[in-house]
Length: 63
Image (cartoon, rainbow, N blue to C red; front, top):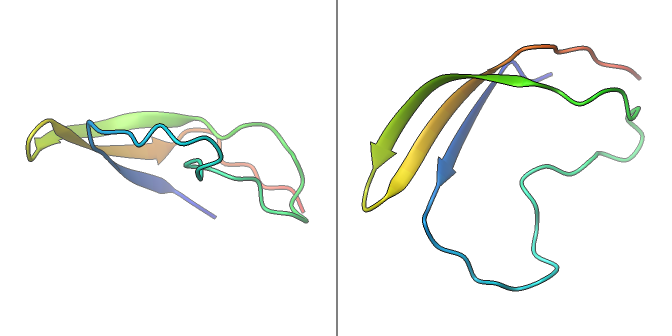
């Protein structure tokens, strides 16, 4: 179970198709409804990067 999400964004991209996404559904887990997050904090880092802290708004897990 996840109760908080920390995400670092960098202002670059490689442009390749087929690259990994941030989230992937785990085989065997129910589809359920999407997990929603509330933004808790934003911090500017480095040369244009962002550090985001989010808390889960509707954590409901199905097996």
